[in-house]
Image (tube, rainbow, N blue to C red):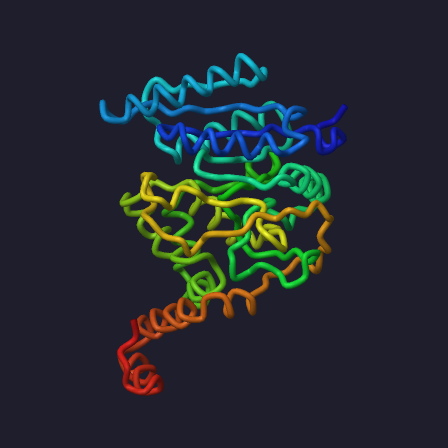
Length: 318
């Protein structure tokens, strides 16, 4: 049987954990509300400690993982040294896609709704042949939640909270951040479009990645697909909630602006035209879009920047 004829059952669930056993337990508890979960192959990746302070949380996380491996027949990968989330995800997803054609990726600071897996497997099967699609996202930003509970949408690039993709799309990803930044920055219009129609702070994150200030697989995965012109599908109401913005994570502080109410519906959403919803993004983040314009005009000339200040009533742009 060929890879693409296996349908939605040819999928591996990849869980990435580190040193937050309480968050991991919440994630698995939420997955247990999904009827499909016992029928899918699951692999849990546990990263190694960075220092002695990490060791207690890492050990407790591994005890949970080993219990589930023994009781549920999961597979496990336990790193002796700390790879960091970026290397852990890239190598882990690659490993899973050597076993199956599709993968669903979850980090330990997520919770999912009761129909997350049915939505993900259904849409992965629906779009597996469509090369315009980078991935399927289970998460929807609060401001992008649809008024209609059956209307899904597409955005250019890729999402990183509760998502899935296919072997061929993952295999075409570019992980060289300098190459990605050069491709976007070489043309002022392209740079402006990336800032305008992309995720919050994407350009600055990509720049920091290329300078070695951060180590993010997500910004490279997003930028690579954005450059390729691929879109990701997001549901009308989020099937994923991020619980890591409580100050416990390595890369995130405390905030509630990404909080979502989990979907309780298993209805199949209507799928519109595969295109970028630029108007939605503009409505969602008008201040960020304005800031992108400010940055663009700064690059062009100081007089243009002064004109923009005058246009906005003399108030200094943020």
